[in-house]
Structure formats: C-alpha cells, structure tokens
Length: 132
Length: 149
Image 1: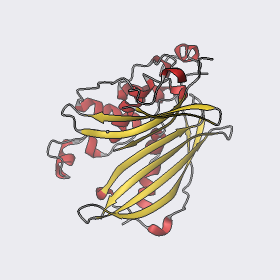
Image 2: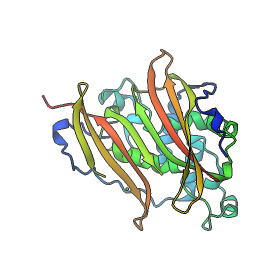
Image 3: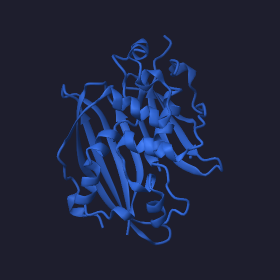
Image 4: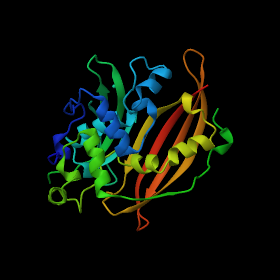
C-alpha cells in the first residue's frame, strides 16, 4: 500500500523504487490465465509453445508483466492518483506540470529480467495532491 | 492481413459485472499483496468507497468475454502472426465490486509499416471506452496489435 506522495516531493529526474518479482514458476502462468481469462496455450502448454518455436516451452503473458509494473507503480503512488498507464511490450520522472488544476507527473517504467534483458517499457501519469 | 476497410468499425458492447472475487484473483495471480484490493476496511481507510480494481483489471472483461479474440477474427488477422505490441489505460473514475461496466471496442487505426529488415507489418489500434451503470466514463484502453505478414 502506497503512502500518500505529494507533488512537492517529486522532482523531474526522481527515480521510482524498484520492485523485484519472481522467480516466475509455471504455476503462476496457470493462475494468471485463470484470473485474466487469457487461455492462449502459448502461456500454459509446453508442447504447444515448443511447436510454435519457443524452445524452452511456455512464455509469460505480457499482461502479467504489465501487472507487475502496475504493482510497482501502486506500491509507490496510490492507485487513486493514477491517471494513465501504458506499456510497450526501458524508471524515472520525465515531466512535472500543473495543468487544468491537476498536478501531473509523468514517469517512465521498465521491466527487465535477471540478465538485464528489457521485457516491457512504459510510462504512467499521476495527479498528486499538494501539501498546501 | 488485417482488413483495412474496417477502420472506424465499432463492435457490440461487452457488459460485465465486476465481482469482488475476480479483483482478488487477479492481484493474487500478479502476487500483489496490497490490502486495498481485498480488504474493504483497508480500502476505505485509504479514501476509496470499497476495494478498487488493480491497474490492469480492464483486460479481464475483454478476455473472459472472448471479445478481443472476436475482434481479431473479424479483422481477418492471422492469430499465429499477431503480437501484443502496446497496451495503455486512461483512468477517469474508480471501478468497484458490483459495478456493471460496458466496454465498446472500436478499430481506431490500421497502418502498414515496414521494419528495418524490410518485412511488412500491420499495426492495428483497438480502442475501448468503459462506461459504468450510471453512464459515467470510467476508463479508456488502447491496444496495439502487430500482425507480421
């Protein structure tokens, strides 16, 4: 649960805290398939995954990794302040402005595996309260 | 290849009642221990009316209703060649257990691009507007599908 963060606490260049997840186990792919309704066999059936060219078998749902990134964001910024969240299937604050009465920050996020290979890049906007 | 004549087409709306258990199931699958998604009292203490849905919950109605696979089929996109390129959400209001959400998919754009190695791809953007039972816009989703040719 994120503590309230105020607009004054954030500077352009502020880095969000890292969240480490995993190691991923196959059971998690099955649980995620059931929770999300995405039953693409590429994520749960090793034989199928190998047949379509994944030499190590099943791969994680991209949306599960986006879910991890969502967890990283809402562990730092309360969910209720989150206004936009998008990913591309490489985190710092890239913009900070007051617009239309909202105090907006824009932050980049990246999900990488243990070898440093980038899995997801994205960004989010949050509207934060001020201390005043 | 994707049927370029379908840009602008709207598909039938998906109507979805948000269940408390489904919110809990998704955060459990992600491994997010935040109590606001599962404990109403914890959520109310943080200023929510009830447990809010987590940031990527908007995918759940679309997958469980088979709406997204239906759109892909209608656009004549080859399932074996399609990749999920991007996903973006805009959040206007919280979604709570018991809300009835209506989501309407629309083909926002189909563009052909050529990658560095000269291979052609169709970039298909699907937009979804999510409206609650009071007619209030709660969120918007944008999915970019990439079909390799």
